[in-house]
Image (cartoon, rainbow, N blue to C red; front, side, top):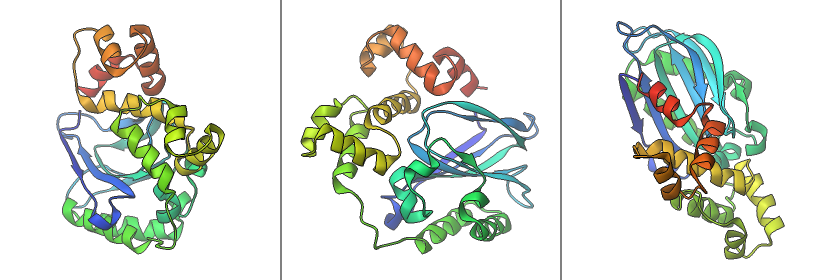
Length: 257
């Protein structure tokens, strides 16, 4: 686990597009720089700035854009001990970065590959500010400047995503399509265009995310499976490993390093 971790909400005008900003730091005197970037299944798109140190004179090592994905990966990178990140809702991508959710699905690219010269401007601004609060302000200002108020969100899909998140991915998709007054085929097509994932996979990832974010420790995996809506212990472990690349036991062990 990082020695320091913080989530910061965006300004009100961005809350429907950005889930949160986040900061993670590891004590350089205690642990060696981290040279493997672990990714897990995620319904959000992450923009990350990786540094060799925090505070004054930070050295930017790399930037990364990790598109929402249904798979885990381990990517070798330059050793870092400080990260600054932005977690975007996938439906925000056309508005804030000018691409569709489908274009970034499963991608791991540099920020420059996505924003071109604007990436250089943004990273220079971030590097010049040693204080986290000011870096967050710069990010808020940058994304406010990119808002395209002519784009209209698909209200039915926005509603469906909200229901799936609030119910931790345990909704039946045909019933959700009926609630949105759409045929199953229409619903699946519009949902994929809105999120970059089909609704069944999206729901499975949301359920996995709810497990990870809960911080719960269950007495048995059977108890966890029943509480979280999995068929049985084997299904829970298989799904968790598919999305994290690790068994639940190994995942929590790694998280506590």
